[in-house]
Image (cartoon, rainbow, N blue to C red; front, side):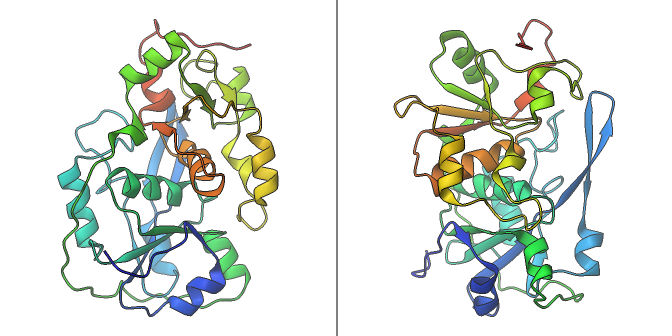
Length: 287
């Protein structure tokens, strides 16, 4: 691993100074969601990347190469081998550093960040404010192809404790052994929004909307003290599982809790509500 570790959250000024670092890989992770019956359809955004992107970046296809093609759910964690190959194809290996960004409120970048962490790769960071802050500040935008990178080796070292399975989620709901956080909107939490086919939230879950973590004008995370206040109700000695619709927004909550607030006991429910609602016997609450 490289000897130049990254902080988990980097500024646009930092990235501008390091754009040409030979060991740095910059990945755009943006995905667009379109409403559909019982959820959403995911559209990759490589065309938007091609129209203008941060220099020296490549497009990471979260909806394709970085998901399990055999899963009926969107964005399911791939196998370690599939993930490693996708990273190697992007020039990411054991001796590189990675900065992740998106143009969709940061949660797509945190999804890939969380995946990297779950496969044992620590030298990664999220660009605070993503493409929105980068362009608002007038920083350079490129329309050329992704840079050619030397072949490298990505060695996965899975950390299964960072990803909660359906069985673990069912146990957590039953025995109330975890603090469960719904990262979707208050309307989803209350049941007013039933976009995923059934109304309500997992029993015992609290609600910290992922969008509430950021400044919607700049897409930057809110100050740490404000973020700490949003999660102040959490007991310090109970582990946390975050969920959302498909394991995306939940990673932004998890990122804040672990990387900005210092918790070490957080997992993301990968299947999230999209998986949970497939069995009517799995309970949801609207109060």
